[in-house]
Image 1 (cartoon, one colour):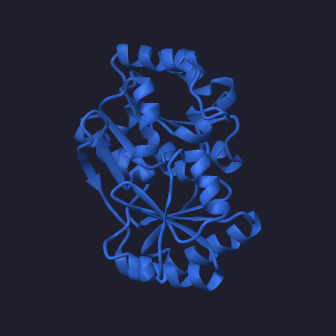
Image 2 (cartoon, one colour; image 1 turned 90 degrees about the horizontal axis):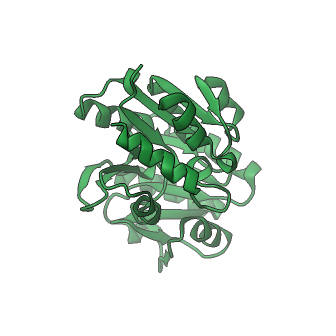
Length: 266
């Protein structure tokens, strides 16, 4: 099979624990592009958070951000596709956030807004490299346009599990609720996922699912791993993700993306 598109998750897949991309991996990605394979980063990150890494990789075309809610052209910053969270649904989420005293990220025009400071803001800023803007007053009064994505950051993983289950039970018919990291509960429009967005992008490029490779580590990568002709999990991926992948490459700290490109794709 001649693969034509490689979709790569960023955190805990492409990036090492130190949030860097090795020279070997950078070279492998360039080699894939030279061989005519389109490389697309597919991340839950904001565009501004992903951009420094995209520039380092020399990528200039499409990037999938916010778990598929926003597709941009890297070089120009042009918006190709944007599917934000319904405003009324967001207000309902905010009621739970206020009742449970949760931390929530709100994303407007690629700017990060938070409802409070503390662990949630500090942890997210450390990983993303993006400074947050503290909302003054009630978050429901603040938001007057749809947010690209919502993200609850919860320090207590067991509490995060319960919150995720509650949100899924309450809003599962209108929102896509998933996990990226153990502390992150991702909330998107029901029709948004990395897999759905990757499918649309591939179709627009005239590329079939059989010609796509997708690699990731967490639950928010499942849809694209299952969509792709070759779905790949890194060795550090969650067990359910590895169980549903076609191939398991080395971990993110063992340059698993480079191994995938060198041994399987090229």
